[in-house]
Length: 444
Image (cartoon, rainbow, N blue to C red; front, side, top):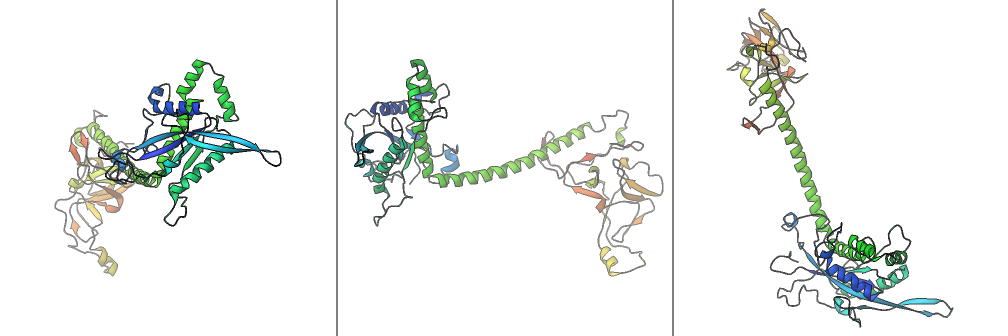
């Protein structure tokens, strides 16, 4: 079946409204046809109960599902006012046996005095419109659903109506070999239930009759009791049968949509977190050195945030950046002054395990001695050493001067990318703190 559009009619779904009282059934049909009059005071009926969207439970738009699955955007509902007539007789043991005399259709508005057979509704050819040249097949054959109320209150009477409708609908569920497939267009039959404060629908209906006119009008508007409640129930049955027709397809779309939303939410969360951290870093960049006006500006070191930076492995304080490394970098394995020559040392001699800086940085403090240790200015962890007379790198090359920080002591972080000065367009790998020189003060 093609999705409904401007060039084709929506499929039609017939819902039988069954009751024992013709006037009450006609009243329900009138409320359904004029449901726009109930649109106030918390009413939940839509403006037009003549149409139902298969996606009403999923709140999907046509953009969500029409390009993906073959589901109509709307289904037309045809309400069939039906009156059930019961009678009883005395059996051979003196007991009374109640039976269903007839169940007939009473016209579009439920006002026909003499009812008609329901059989013709099950004998149609399943097309959406007999005049439709395209001959599109209607997915709802015969009567798709039955909503029971309006005086049909007892469980026994409901069962009799259900048995009658199932017998008629079996003709729509016959396979080519004459057998009945219960999974093919099986009719949905439901009966209205009383509110929790009542023991039966008979008691609830009696309570409605005892209301004054103003109270009755309010109850109908709010659909809590009486005809308003029944009209709401009938429409919900129509919604249910339409939804069930495409439940598998719509559930699959919702599963895919949920998975997509989850992926998007996770991606958004990661991006939001990165942007938040980046914003904090920008703020820190803009305020760095402003907390203490006595701190000289040349004691502040801020690595270029758009390039790779290196942070203390223990406290995540950013210590230096790509621009602070020696330039050009030294050639590896130029010298080897080790007395021992083992295979292990030979392998190690091919690898640089240090970051070699071009010069000392403000946060390193006093570096007047010929050599000394380097500590993270914040957590005071030893992170390297310096020697003005030079030192040998792990790769074998002698470097002078040697300002070395082992790679194992710091974490490498990707640079931030900025679309402009006010907009962060990139991400960062971890939280970061920029280092400012305070030789005699431990910064916390």
